[in-house]
Length: 308
Image (cartoon, rainbow, N blue to C red; front, side, top):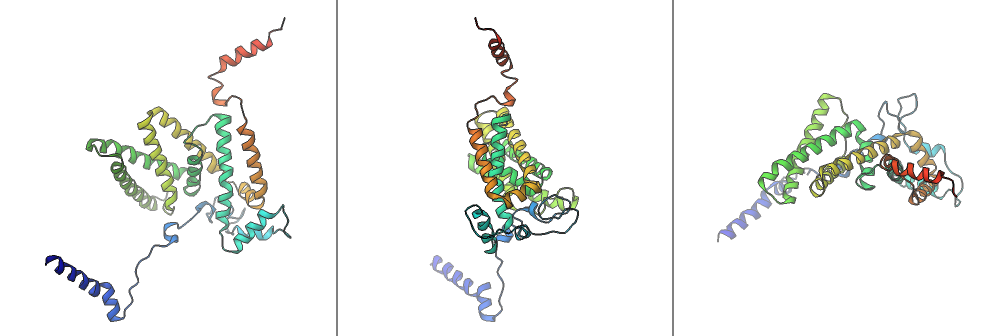
């Protein structure tokens, strides 16, 4: 009997609630909706018009913003042939509503991945794979290197502190990390609100995706610390941040942006050639020279000895 009474009350509530009032009175109440623009207010903030930054959306010597499409308009290709197929595809995509910022960012991703590969096999910089440094470089592109480092430092600090505190409650891993994510969300929101008052860091208008990339990096740090050691986690973290900062600095260069936009085929072919070369590299890395210095010296002395 009680169940029937509760069901009837729920039905009456549905009719006489906000929806029922709208139907009887004729007054339309607009329901809040979440759109893509709310989730991603700025897809690539560094490719937006920001005064004082050297990017494609600001003219040299002037403060007037211009769109990336204007570059393609000024350098339009002629009739289609096999060589200019990629350029024609870019123009077609932009004519059909695809953002030029998205195209530039997509073309920059393999370039940064190639750079990370060269730095790893040439200099010996190691990070969390090739995907994580590339994504953090995109995050730094959106937040700025200084703002990104401050934001990541806060996320990592909250993640480590929450792990230490939650250990006392002896929770399972996933619930503990869920609580840690809640604390990270609250702390990030507090930092963004504080940035609007301090006006020191421009991180108040960033989208959710750079924050998610940094949370993933903090998660990788915690996992490595638990599975391997603190020293290994610190080493991989430092390498990832250095690779990401170098990648973000390269992506900010106007010449690099214009090159991948106007010559996409050449940039992709160059990346392919560099990766094929690095993929067959068998020499020693720069960071390992000190480690194998004695062995290299003995080998050189042995080669200099005259053969009898």
